[in-house]
Length: 142
Image (cartoon, rainbow, N blue to C red):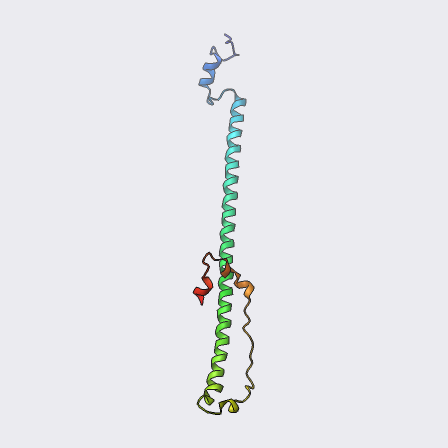
């Protein structure tokens, strides 16, 4: 016996679709639906993977920038302390000997052997101090 929609063992097309393992309709409709779902899942996975990689890269960039800023600040602190120690040694070894003498301006000898170098601070690497929202950040540091 032939049904109206084709040979479905006496079932109408609607009844046959309800008994089929894929309720979506014909086999072609099922493959299109499965392909669409797979494409949607793959696209979602790609979007999530891209977002995760970008957030990871931004996090790594922030960590790297923080390391550079800490290194620049430590170099500046080291140079300031080195210069201060040289000045303190000069004061203790040369100036304090003549401090109480009334003619100390005549007794001070030229400071031979003292290497006076200015602080070698890379101010461009300390520019992160000016990026703060606090307008008095340098006054706070001083």
